Structures are given as structure tokens and as C-alpha cells.
Length: 110
Image 1 (spheres, rainbow, N blue to C red):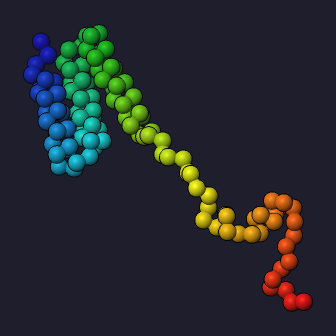
Image 2: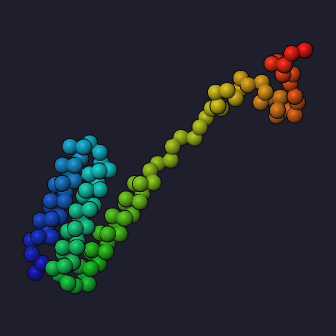
Image 3: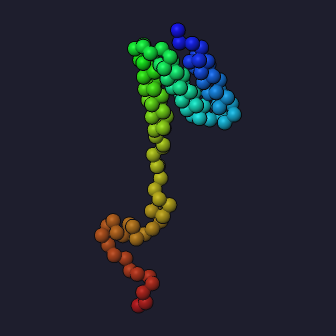
């Protein structure tokens, strides 16, 4: 018998995750709170059960937390830039340099 503490912690984890989602509006913050509290519930279950199945469940919860958080931290790739730099097309020195020519320096006198 493991007692009601791990089950209570699991229930409170989901409640805290929902509360974090409602108050902050950030699903990442809510998921982080949920995953951290589920790890705590798994460790409580492990400390009370002392069996291989409890160890397996706790390890699975910790691995799931790490995998989910790593996937979320990476984020989606941003869009590739589609335009040139603002001065690139207007700067005539770039066009001259790419062709290997030297233009007359307008600052120098005759």
C-alpha cells in the first residue's frame, strides 16, 4: 500500500498546471509546472512503494519530462530571410566591386 500522498500530489499537479495556464496564459509555463509536480509525485510513489514497478514509473516520468522540455525549448525554426539588406541594391560600389572595377572617387578633386 503506497498511501494517498502520491495520488493527491498527482491531482494537485494537474490542478496547478491548469491554474498556471489560466493565470499566466502561457502553456509552456503551465506544462513546466505540471511536469515538475508529476516528477515529485513519481518520486513520492517511489519512496513509498520500494519496488521495481515504482522505479520504472518514476524513471519514465523523469525521461518524459526531459524529452518534452528539450523539444519545447528547441522551438520551431523561424522563417528564412527573403530580402536583401536595405542598402545592398542601392549601393553602386557593391556592383563595381563584384565586377572587379574601380569607380571614380567623387570626394577627390580633379
